[in-house]
Image (cartoon, rainbow, N blue to C red; front, top):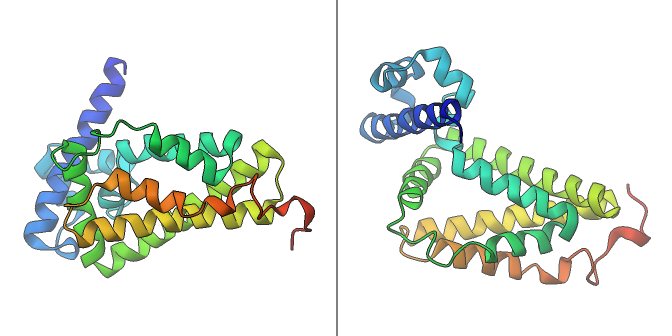
Length: 204
């Protein structure tokens, strides 16, 4: 990153850390974006510019954006299922250890997401959006049937959601990377080059 990008990333991280502290202490609904901005020594408009909404302070972060971008890029050349497998197995085995700072932050976020109905609804929307992005990338990159690609993209997003659910239920004790790889591997029969291919069917 250049200096400007680093300042932006540091500001985003500070805002999210402060927001998580406040949400955990007072509850998500009781804390405003203005309060988060004051506590993080940032302008309220800066927080909105980075995260879009108050929900975005929990749902999104830089690590997520990098991973999701990698999944979509891989779907263009390997398909939604094969690309997700390649990306996840390419992550070093110890990168998502329970002690890694990014994983500790993920667990804090997931606890809030699972315990706050409004946030869970936003997470469901983000999961659908990811699935559709994976499907569109596969269809565009491989020339696969758009409908079948959309099904595969949604399936990958849902499988990763199950992995996160199981990880949360273990309170972060289980290895998140392994769970994600296993979830995607369970979809192996749906790979674009496997037996379930939409190329021969007409899109609805």
